[in-house]
View 1: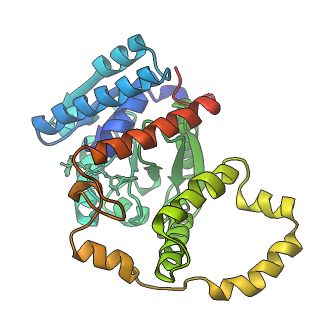
View 2: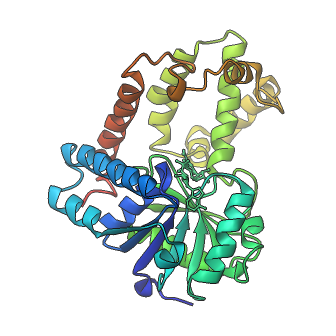
Length: 319
Ligand SMILES: NC(=O)c1ccc[n+]([C@@H]2O[C@H](COP(=O)([O-])OP(=O)(O)OC[C@H]3O[C@@H](n4cnc5c(N)ncnc54)[C@H](O)[C@@H]3O)[C@@H](O)[C@H]2O)c1
């Protein structure tokens, strides 16, 4: 098994939103990065995306111009998968969330990457074990699930597949720390891993509350960003229960659980918007309206807040 100091060259497969941010993060942490896409125009777009991400980080004081340029210049892009993975130690895959597509990529990676290389997937919820099953090295396949935007969000889930070796989980957690990320170790290959189970439980209840006329989407968003999000940056649910007293939470749970959504399908409010083509910033309308320039403004507002939070926590990306 590789040692952490032996991991120097990382291949990123898929150069979309996630792949480019992951390539950026590894390059800024000093790793040799090869970024693979099937088409030159995807690679050009990825470089532009990374440069734009970096400009905003430089403006926010989270990255020096020099470090940004060195990292960007150091990313080697290629349309050849064989060239991308030649001699690499770690692969991070970020192709679309379709099991057969991921399996095709992993079968190719298994043929082309060095036998010792660890193959990781950024799947949001497909079974790691199903992706690993097409390889002859399932013990070296691991979930490495980033949060969007990957160049800013501190946690990365490290997910153990049924056959992932302990040493691979440990090494991937160490690697996450080396690139300034906080590894969230998920011991079972379950749907949604950890982050999305928690997030979707909240989203289900948020939709329920809006459908019941209890509060508007704007009010729910405000309650989360100013309230729950603020508190949960300081304490998680288990520390929260300790601080508040377990008996209180038992009492609240005893009458409140039965009131909460137990919907097993995506709710009407969500499904009807999707059916109407109102799918969010890409179409100009979701729960909010995005006139021309509105989508960019919403992303910039989110990133500005994330920059503030990163600075407060002495940003893991700050170099
Ligand atoms: N976007 C998010 O919020 C988010 C968050 C966490 C994880 N993820 C996961 O990350 C993965 C990628 O998501 P994304 O948002 O970056 O998607 P994306 O559509 O922006 O990028 C995917 C890229 O992969 C390319 N691609 C397709 N087949 C390929 C192949 N065989 N070889 C190389 N490149 C190929 C596509 O052309 C595209 O550029 C998905 O599994 C997704 O579930 C996404």
